[in-house]
Amino acid sequence: APRPQLVCVDQEGGRVQRFREGYSALPPLEGFDALYRQDRDSALELAREHAWLMANEILASGVDLSFAPVVDLGRGNRAIGNRAFSPDPQIVADFTRAYVEGMHGAGMAATLKHFPGHGSVLEDTHFDNAADPRTLDELRATDLVPFVAGIAAGADAVMMAHVAYPQVAPEPAGYSPLWIDDILRK
Image 1 (spheres, rainbow, N blue to C red):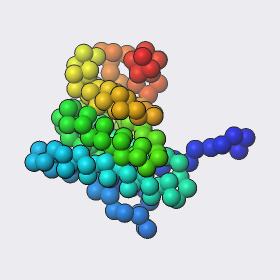
Image 2: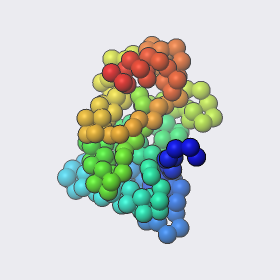
Image 3: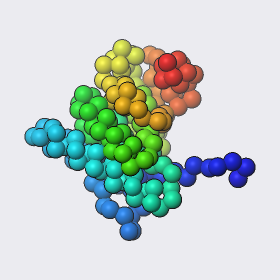
Image 4: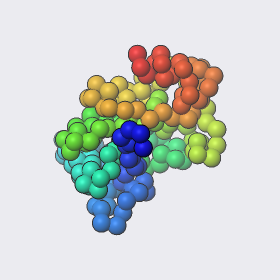
């Protein structure tokens, strides 16, 4: 290659754990929500440890980056499912900050996904088109809350959703100049 290349993987835990043999079996993020409601501090510490362990194992393998964490809201999306921390935006924001800290503690960049939020639509965009009818103000009050928290915590990258938000822009967010240039970058 003419320049250094990043080697990346999706190593979230649960059903999206690409490397399994010889790696820790990481639980899906959804399980952290129940613990959070009983013991917030312990749940956040476990999320940090989950992130740190995942990042350390991936880095030790020679892989540069895991596309994590999922900061979508857990609201029934077929693709997200148990990959989300919680349906509550404030709880997801808390976990997002902790997870970014854990990844950074291991020396790995963090990638927030799937901007501006994939968890509140039913369709899996690997197979179907998805459209979220909410306004930008409604999204700011819900799905965007964890992204704001993650960016404030120093997340290094953002993966876009392939969901359309017709009240905001005509095309899906993943190739929308409005979502990418005006909303995310500003």
